[in-house]
View 1 (tube, rainbow, N blue to C red):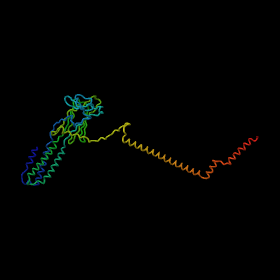
View 2: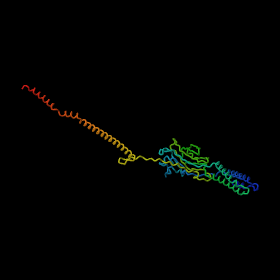
View 3: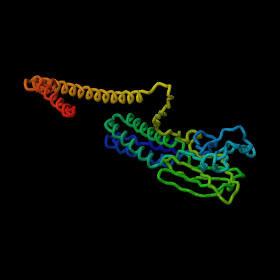
Length: 369
């Protein structure tokens, strides 16, 4: 079809009047229309099956994928998680359901697949590129430069075709098929999410196959398989076997599995545990500060008490001395001195009178002699 388009583009009349400036513009528009028609008839690339390993790093198993060398039976250390087992020569990733050892977390598998590109995006991009190149080459179109104009036209056609080839050559998965082992008997939920669209279907894993078809283009599809606990079943097993994707244009498994992006790092706040010190250990800076402030308060209280005591004592002593001095001055007055001398040394008359009274009394008592 592309060869037919090129032949049709080259079969242009050679009349000299046809290659005027206004005619060449019409030729370019016709060539652009013809190239778009030819490219529209070509569909996307062929489909092929690509096998994705069930242990691919881009597949997430929750709560964990057990790392053990025992591939023939369940290990006790893998309870509640996923374990790689060998079933009839095929490597499967199996789980027995939640376990109290891991807080009864429900086992899940997450697979993200890159979808295709939408056709409207391709056609809009091709149209914008065609118009841009047409505007750039319009000023170069003259009747004397027919071959240059034809070369520009072919170049424009080639760029448009290269853009179409580039868009359709990007790998895209249109379907994903997940096989389950014959031993699987657990009930599962299959959730398919793409953009704002999400679909959930409950099924029994004994069906053996989980298929997702008609995946949304230009979106990354997330496939989630969730283990459902069934109270009526004592032992329920879920085995994830082979994973096959239908990919366009010779893509590989790594090309359709988007790289998992890590969440932004968050700094964990630091916590310093308080240290208990023994009595013999040196006190910390905080304890030393509180102890020094306590000592300062005690020193201030003692200083205030001693100061008040000494001050009051000095006042009392000074008052007592002033009182003694004043008393001594009063004793030195003349009237006070004579009164004191009279009190201390009685007069002779008083003594004589006392003696006469006593003598007369004695005479009266001995009068009969």
